[in-house]
Image (cartoon, rainbow, N blue to C red):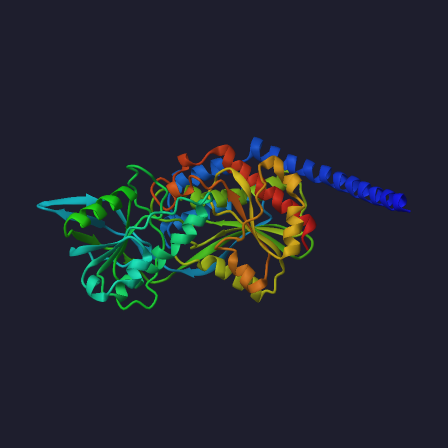
Length: 458
Ligand SMILES: [Zn+2]
């Protein structure tokens, strides 16, 4: 009896193994076709070169942002999309203008490389001079008495947490400092807020990195700026020795909201349901927005091209979306989800690439436990692309509203993260910082993931 039971068990598991292998061979073969197609004939890299070198950085509401739409429509058509259309969305418009930070050291004025934080107001082009007060942590700033900060410049010198193997964990820990710091300083009467950049740059790597901030309910919209790591260390050292005064001048500021658009391209399916794949096409106004997020845009275009070339007929309509305004408002993602909700669209999955065009390692997942299990069952099929990490949670800023409003399962391409915050939001985020094979492997990973989701997600 016992023996029979075991025999039945082995028979059953043998059968399962055979079925799984047969299926894996099919899926594995298709993933191999996708990989070959992208690595041998992919156009993501040349698209990225055009976007970076002919258009450049693309802040919301600028002419470059508008030129990106003209280019993207053409690129999607060349990729073989069935339809391409623009989805209107109002976006904030912020302009940088001239800006400078100088430290008064004796009779000397030392110029410090700086960048205003996105959405910050400036000094209306006038010099503002005040003493700097240094804080080593956000807690210290929060606990500081008003008398300590009144009429002074609050300087938060908290370094990027280096102990996390995944740099996004470090970024998550300090992102709130940049976003909320200016309002906290303003409430205590500070006249400006300076932050050490959220950057993994080391040594004399002295570049400031910008990024979005918010005034919340702060009483005054004080100027908020970032400086590089080395400058931050020097200033803090000087402040410990003597009172240090700084002269800040900036003509940054918010303008009226303007009309922009999400760029949407479709490869039609038969189910009437959708799978979204995307990145955001706006960028900060320094560098070329190559990793952040030109990479995600050209990879999404590549998914369409690859499906078309391999004659993959998806069950669900594959929608590649280049989202507007992720950096200083996230309005594009919200408008897309609002539209999906109002049209009662069914979204089977949304995938975003917005973590850099580096070697793919896996996908972060924001979905039910049973959906996570489905993804994990593809592990072996996806391993040849170097994809093994499906343990992280999260989707992406642009697709998160789909989860909130439509409960759409989300996935985010997770590349190697070691170099991302060296270039993120600074002038080093240029085409030359992107490797062709790494970018294309990421595109192939997205196409393979979507191929499998189209087949196994409902
Ligand atoms: Zn981004």
